Image 1: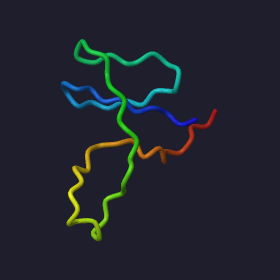
Image 2: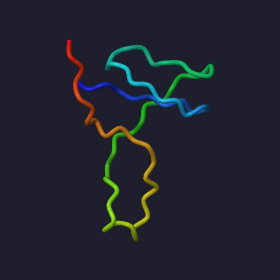
Image 3: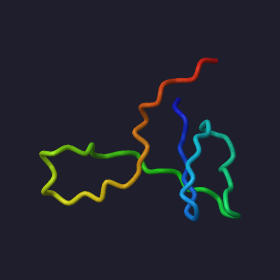
Image 4: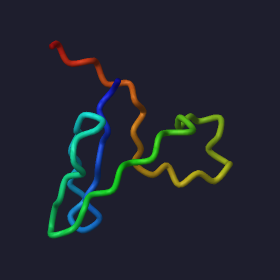
Length: 65
């Protein structure tokens, strides 16, 4: 399984952890997981409004064990 990426709501720091690990804490608060990407930005969809917020595409290479 791929790692889960969390983001700090205060300082916007991002960190990846393995699924099942404890939720990381940053700036005194629990970090929130990035939502999975649902659309890829492309010029054909430029006229349709999409906030294009940071998301986790789930395409990171697997770590060697």
